[in-house]
Length: 185
Image (cartoon, rainbow, N blue to C red; front, side, top):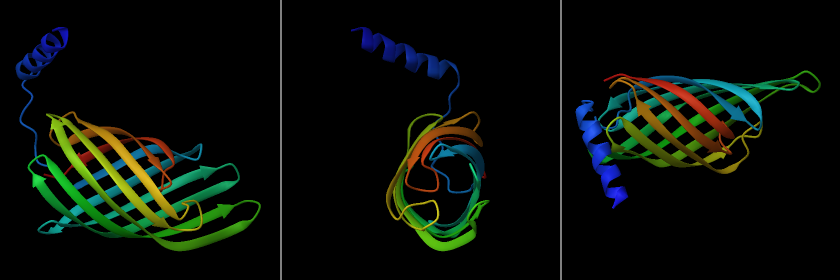
């Protein structure tokens, strides 16, 4: 019985606070954040922009400080999203991934690879979005070839401004991350 009272109180509180109906999932945004890559600090930035019905272009930049150098990733590609309803979207994207490493002991190296993702974005409650994806990557510098996983929860402070916490494994990040996103509606 206590669970029902808690749910009722939360529903009433959300209604009193003026939380609006959830906006549809958007693929038009700029974002930046901090993350972890195998215990090393990473900063990242990205952009996504719809270019045709359900098709978007995306690009990302990651820079990871290592003990004896750094690794930078530059990505660019296309994605396709299929709205399942106004609160859930299936997405598939693929990007070319250029990596450049600078190691104070072993010199510089670079590699060209690719990364593809399939996942879901859904809005289970007003101002809250969940995202999960499986990634397949091919790059020999810091990202290991193979399957990875990305999961995150995003809270919308306003319809445009949101923050996220998440976890990635065996992709550009390999650990926890935090990001801020500005949605271009």
